[in-house]
Length: 162
Image (tube, rainbow, N blue to C red):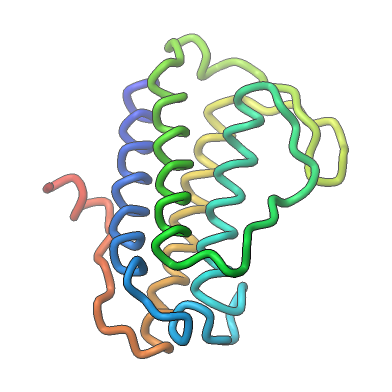
């Protein structure tokens, strides 16, 4: 099971990198343009993915986060991209250090409302990777609606074929 989740973590980092490279040179007029979606801009969507990965990483490390991280609204796109990738890299490295037996283990943490939760590691990881994929799909739509033509292809098979 470790091999599968190590591979998912590597894919997640790769896919996030594709978008990070695309946003690094964006101007605020594109990055912060308000568009109707789950989150109102490219920045807000990326910061949501970034925050969720941070929260789940902390839960894996035995820390409960009960408030969404707040990010500087004046961060340049390049700074947002770098911070996003640093978090994804940290998550991938954490998974690499796990033992095979860890993936069937239960983790105790507090959810965002402060309620105690207990979940299997493999379920937690499937959630965080599916969550990121879902919101990267929204980024594709946000890019199109904003008029950005350089839309990264982040399908798993594109990654697997390398």
